[in-house]
Length: 459
Image (tube, rainbow, N blue to C red):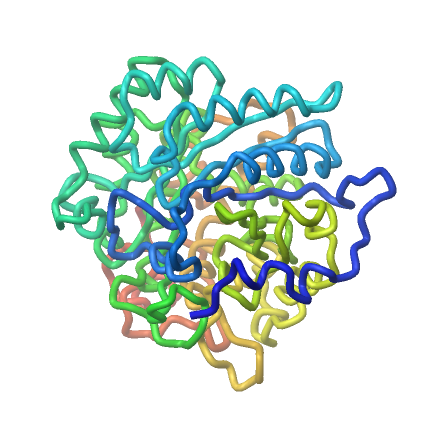
């Protein structure tokens, strides 16, 4: 295994930069920082990051004071806009202890420029939260993301500790502490083979029992590479089925648009709605190009993306190089532009390309016959969701654009313009749903008798 620490001064680090003369990057960027590297107190089956421990043999996997100071200062110096966000992840970042983050906050206040606003977010499994942690998070206005995959039997399917025990009740205890201390939190839910067939059970549990107002649904597309690298086409059996993923999204969407618009914020729905309203940005996986979401290891090594922490995507070390040089390097720009430049023909000609732009490059594993232009594993699911949801989203967007509040649409089957029904257009091209397969809309009927037929299905 290549030692990425030794590689930190390699050729990528000296790539040409187009940063601005004032030392800031030419574009806003985002960095996921791993202060404890790949180390975690849990051993979730689908975690692609645990294997990254092998990149740094002999490391204590604790970010040093030197790297922490360089990170805070270089991020603040390089960010071109007034808002500077620090996103702490892992592994499990709480393993660093409260004092580590208290010092980081002190450095943020010392180095920020006049008028700059600093924001902190931390993604945690929630099992190590206690009163001291929650008091700190509340005092310094941290936004907390908690990983929770649904009710106990679904969450514990893959999210277990190193002894193989489920973690559900420990996560709920952490959430209750956050709620007690008034700490804002959102829920990150992965959609995988273990919960893909239970969309409403998952969503209603998060909404009604957890009280979540902000939810992210992240599909698990896991390559069978023991190093956790994005190489090879073989996927694990934990990977979400594309048709099931589309059905999952559409089932939750049906509940959300008729009940929860304006009070529950589902990231994917909000981002898609934003595209109907002509808003840019929002979610890197649906942008035309990428390259502005980088990853920082505990050593100071900067990688092109959180999903590409591997030697061939190492940009350099921020202790040695300004962050703006890494963000604006030719190497990183080529990495970001490749998302657009390697789209297969079926994507370039697709009617929903403007919504997804081929999805995340890490999920492009389906051969198309075009060399270097693979199709996203989730294509069929995304296509089904985007086409089936467009009537409802267009109605909602029209309402917002006219100055009316965002509220749930009626579900009477007649006055909602089809928001409660899938669109009656059959997908074409390689991503088409087989006629005898279950319909992606979640009706339980065969595709040919539902969305693929000529009859309108009533909800």
